[in-house]
Amino acid sequence: MRLTEQVLALHDGIREVFLLEERAGLFVVAEEATRDKAAILSNSINEMTRNGTLAPAVILGAATQFSKTASSLRLVGILYGDVGIMFAYVNENKLLAISTEPSSFSNAMQLVNDALPGLIKEIERKTLGAVKSVVDAGEIARAYVAKTSNSSRVFINEITYRAANHRWEVHGSYRSSRVTPSKEFQLEVDGDDGAIMSFWSSLPSSLVLFAYGVVALLAALSLVAWLLYSNLLMR
Image (cartoon, rainbow, N blue to C red):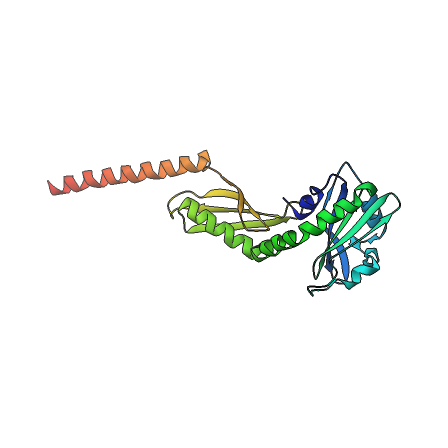
């Protein structure tokens, strides 16, 4: 389960959760989860969004006090009209933006505050095992296919990243020996911890199998012909 989904599940009064990530001095929405098509916070974010980035002005003034020290501020919140707004410090470049029902604000804020240390530890654990590049995803896929198919001939053709579910999709082919037909494969690598989420492998096409059958038949016939010819010479 993604971080925003975990926070959304903490309390029924939580409407929206956004994970904001700082990139080049601006905050972008890296992940989101909403309940019942809520749009209080998302509408505010959209109003302050330019070219897909979230302006730093969305962060409350108190949030500028977030730091790495043990006694520093980790969570700020305010009731604003018919919505409660919270910002929670995750790490030096990530914040959680959360909206709640006004009646649920206090309880939801307490639950978020209690759960925050565990959520941060989970993020740190995933970051250590995260697949951060095409090269990482390719090596994981190559190792898995080689082990699964008992083949040392694994070729990677294409790797794409799907930000929606944090997965790398790898396409390629493999063959167990030089004389066997190659098989295509497709697998998904979890971007958080490198786990293989799905794996698909094709059977050789009928045309390829037919061609290999013809080659094998010709080889057998050649062997029989050679044996007959050798016997005739020996007589």
